[in-house]
Length: 278
Length: 261
Image (cartoon, rainbow over all chains, first blue to last red; front, side, top):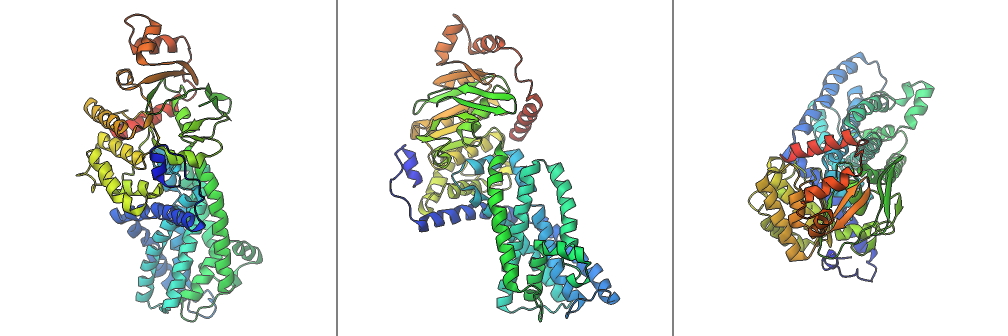
């Protein structure tokens, strides 16, 4: 339906809009939300820079030392190489997992209500937020890549692999930011959200293959980390980011897990987001 | 609108409200804090599903076709709904895209809205630096960009100084003249309601206590009665007002007032 129909209170046109036009308008609404978020980042990029401190410290301090210890058998690549993909995933995770707090902030202000009275489908709003989280995640990736080059990690810079890394990071950001949005919809206050966010990040990070390979883990932890989406994100990143890196589970499975989990979380978040206005 | 009811647990916030509002009418909702005004507006804007009842807004049914309703309404919430981290122009662009305005119509409509609301010069500044009155005008512009049939405004002038209030109302009346938009407004300022609304409903405890034009309402209470008299007489007859949701209400109102002030 055209909005101009609404103008004079005329009845909506009878013809059903085509699938193509529906999809175009859906994507337009996803883009509306995402581009507003990116505009905000452009006005105030401080947050992204401060966020970059943590991965830098992990790689420079933890990475350099642990490489000398040679305490962790990191499959075929050097430990610093192995770690850099894990830290990339971690920095993207940390940015995404606290993203839901902006929804609480918008709810307290009233900005959320503006989104929810618009005719945009709730899933388009949620996806728009996910896309903007992906942009944030990619900005972290740029920083980690630059640092990795400086400390001579054996980074694979072939275009195909770079495109693959962008896709993995976009998916990982979307997945964890949508999870974060669901948590925000449940707890609804900033204080509770920060508490739960802190509680969640540690197990997601340590019960994954981010800083040590699955082969080193006790059996029970290996089971837990195979149920952890971050494990598949790291697995795909190792294969795509490092020269000679390989995916333990195979790239197809990694992408499939990330896609399916993101789709499920988006469906859940779309239902819960609407209830944020109550 | 037919009978609408909303319960929060055991608390009945809106209790069987029935109203019909004519096209192009400015309809005022007045009543004490916690009377159910905001809950009623949230239901009519599809933000909150009614516990029972139905209503037709802009030609579509709230419960059966909420997305159709959303295409035909605009909403200016009591809280701050313009994004302070974006410029005025970017806020309008966001609204235009959310409502799916065709690309070639977007720029002229945004520019026209900015001009109508007297915000053209400030359009490139971050909204975080706007005054309370400018923010309200921007929010109204955002809500009118898709030319809705019905515009809901929840305390649009709360926390504004008299001059800013008057400017906001001048713009609202101008909009109605241009687009024949039906408007539903809640307010705590009696003189505002009296001067600007065609009809007013007085709500207490989730029920409509009285409805009519300002003149009719005053005449029902007595000769020389003011709207304040109507308010006190009819609300005082109904004791125990709004105790349950007091704290949350006060917190929200003060926060809104601070942000607009």
